[in-house]
Amino acid sequence: MRIAIVAPSTPILPETAELVRRIAADACPDAELVFHPQCFLSHNHFAGPDAVRADAFVGAANDPGFDALWFARGGYGSNRIAQCVLARLGPAARGKAYLGYSDAGFLLAGLYRAGFPDLAHGPMPNDVRRDGGEAAVRRGLAWLTERAPDALEPGLGDRPAAAFNLTVFGHLLGTPLEPDLSGHELLLEDVSEHLYRTDRAMFHLSGQKALGTLAGIRLGRCTEVPPNDPDFGESEEEIFRFWCDRAGIPYLGRADIGHDAHNKVVPFGRR
Amino acid sequence: MRIAIVAPSTPILPETAELVRRIAADACPDAELVFHPQCFLSHNHFAGPDAVRADAFVGAANDPGFDALWFARGGYGSNRIAQCVLARLGPAARGKAYLGYSDAGFLLAGLYRAGFPDLAHGPMPNDVRRDGGEAAVRRGLAWLTERAPDALEPGLGDRPAAAFNLTVFGHLLGTPLEPDLSGHELLLEDVSEHLYRTDRAMFHLSGQKALGTLAGIRLGRCTEVPPNDPDFGESEEEIFRFWCDRAGIPYLGRADIGHDAHNKVVPFGRR
Image (tube, one colour):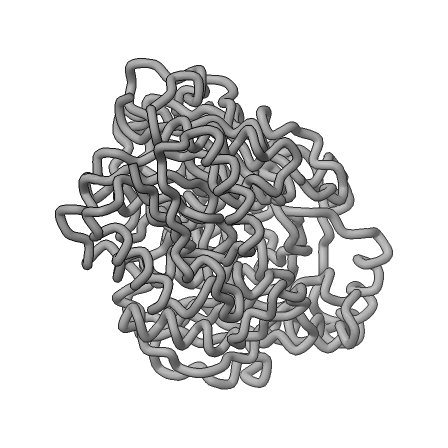
């Protein structure tokens, strides 16, 4: 199979691509990884200007020669191109698998809303740079190439699911990217946010009428949390329970996702 | 007149209250400032537990002996009590003036949605601690006690207006606190946010269908902006223009509001 790698948010380094290629050669020698040169561009905050990132994504997604599109990295920026990209995707794009998380959530949300059937929240090539990141890359490849069951988040059941970064998800609510998650288990993780911000994001999320139809919320890991001044006095789990209780959304416990090497794969919809 | 001061978010120090009392004694000797003891409480992140903050706000708002309610300070926390507070307000609350900004925007939004006629975004007592903050406190008092025209944001015209902190406003969109701002000029300021976050917040805001009916957006000051890594490459004004253009919302220029001593008063609705 052939996997296209593009970077709708921020760039990766050529040596990162080389590391991932070497892991793939060992883990799945039949898979060909094609890093789009756009992955290595740098324009202000982004991996190239909006139009260049959009063209790279659309080109790879619409190319019937690729079986999957792998988001190179998160950061920030996929929201700026999402609507323009979605409008340009053809039939070959709909037949592909898409894997990413963090800022990639903007595009995954829009693709899910548009009915794309094969989307997942999970590891990306740039995760190889994390402590223990090779395992994350191998997990991502195992899902992309063989839908390996042990790559999946272990709590997934019969209900449809979706997973997002809490802050990214909060910023797509009410926009043309927001998908219908009625009946879904929503798995949320976050990184580098003060606990008062996590609390505020959960106020916002749980106050949305449309999300009253969720089957429930599960909490992934919140990592690299800056110290709250003063101490917030509640853990992230207490925060999630508090807002879920107030909104009448079932809190369903923890989820094995996060901005780390252990981040498991969550396919969107039913498995 | 009598002005009640409560702290629905974070606490102030007794010496701050004393400084503000001294300024008021000079600026408006006929006004009596009553700092609710709740202003000085501390419970984790907040000026007392949720129920205590809610009781203080409701008690002051429903007391016909007060002409105005002044938010002591922003920070974080008024969203946690807003809906419970709004449900408990009686006729005396509706006849009062309310002045605050920053995190107070959650309550101001809910009060505006509920049809309260005399609300304004502007200086708070704790601003006395800012560089040049005495002028801010005098400006707030001038609006509260005599609706002084020179306290007002100078660009206000005939159209109704509202003003918010961008991040606070983003977090009340879609919640029961979101007011109808059709035909309004929306003035936005922010503090302590990276420019990529300002960009993301404007993506979210400008993507809301309900905000397509705004008369336009004006940009206040964005202060204490942490360095973007890498440089974002666009100023806050370029960011605002970009998203307003994409959404077809008129960008109407700068506004004289912000987290600083120069923050002018913006009455909600028509002046």
